[in-house]
Image (cartoon, rainbow, N blue to C red):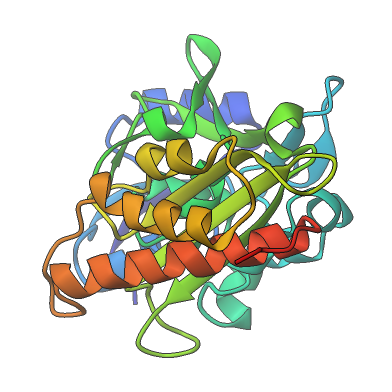
Length: 295
């Protein structure tokens, strides 16, 4: 049983915003894979809930006029993995969210919920950071769009003001066109586990596949929020596709990340894993982009 004070069903995004204004203490619920667990544990017991799960206007994946890929915040993980637009341009995102929980969770869990909970271990978060995602937020003052790295404020806290709802995640055309990426989740089990460290990297190679024109890398569980490693990116940009470049790139991530000790892994172990994952993700991204690493 769940201790719910009241449940309000939103009929549209604007109706949801009105309900949140009328009930300022209410919690938004979509798939419920996080919220209901927390309620059962007593953390959100007695809360009012505003359900947005029935809002199909926030589901699906499509192109905007400028080529931006728009992912509705209520799009399930299963949908993302199987979507032809994702498979064509950002297949790594489908692979990343396919590592969330089991099939039942992936069928109800949403990309919006996975980012709005503000958890650094979320499997989608590092990949979205690595692809320069933009978060669309709708509220009483209208629509605003912010880079995903600004959306995460601190552990468990995101930039949602009163009565605001995350309505979509956007991947600009310039952030995906010509890029290939790879994600690795390191956990204590191969499935049904939270990441000890997650790493997502993508690369854009020159036409002759000899030069790294651009590279981006992001981590989960390398700090209180998902984060990029700009020092590593700077080390590899404009460099030849080579063993030396990959090694320098991987070592440089330690200049940016700040993992902590926990019962899952020590800080030192997470730092070691971060370097290994950086090398492996970049190698695979280069391979996917048609490059060959030279000694």
